[in-house]
Length: 100
Image (cartoon, rainbow, N blue to C red; front, side, top):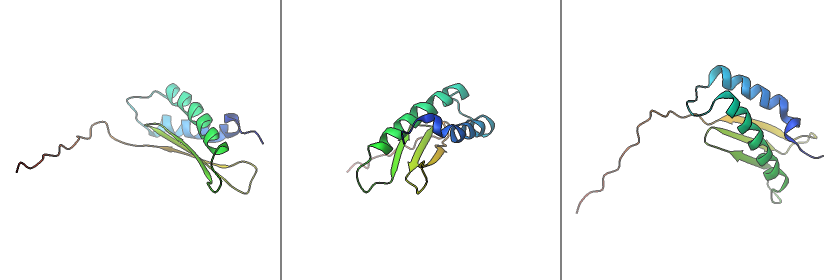
C-alpha cells in the first residue's frame, strides 16, 4: 500500500483541533501548524518507507511537533502526533567556569 498524508487525515484533523483549543504557540499560527503537519507527515512516511531492517518506526519532527509512524499488524501503521511543549519564557541558565 502506498502511504500518503491523506490516509492520516483523521489523526491530523484531531491534532489541529487540539492545537487550536489547548496549545498556545507564539511562533506558529494554526494555519502554519496545518502546513507543518502535512510536511512532517510526508517526512515521517518517507522515514517509515526507507527504515532499515529491524526498525519499526518512521519519525519526523520540528521544534513544535513530532510525528511517529509505527509498524502494526493492520494495513496502516499506527500514527502518533505529539506537541513538543516548552516555554519561550524559560530563562537559560548560564554556567560559570571556575577560575583556577
